Amino acid sequence: MPKKIGKHLFLWSELRQNIIDEHIKHRPGTRPWSWWHLEDRELRREGESEAFYLKRLRLLLPGEKQPKEDLGPKRVECIVLLSFLVS
Image 1 (tube, rainbow, N blue to C red):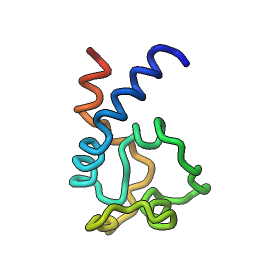
Image 2 (cartoon, rainbow, N blue to C red):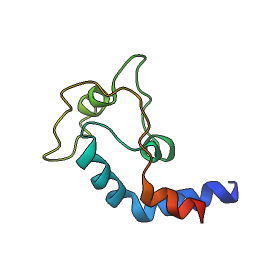
Image 3 (cartoon, rainbow, N blue to C red):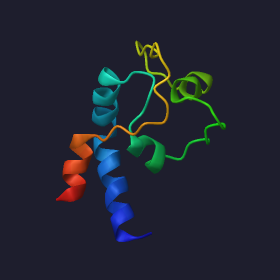
Image 4 (cartoon, one colour):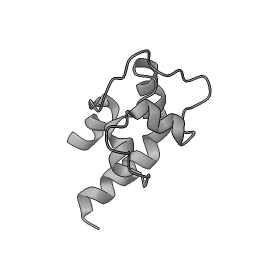
């Protein structure tokens, strides 16, 4: 495993829940880019929104509401994770 990937995985494992909690405050029904890239998840079906994927696999967190509109596959950068990755 490349050294950089190992660092990303370590940071993700340490900060995962905080990053997800902060992310869904602003974009419920979606997950940060790190969740999609660093976790072993079933792939989304073609054309499937993040919200529908999370609902279908019962991955929405308690109290998390689905967005009123489909936000699509936009990436939301998490400042907490990025600050660690840049340093």
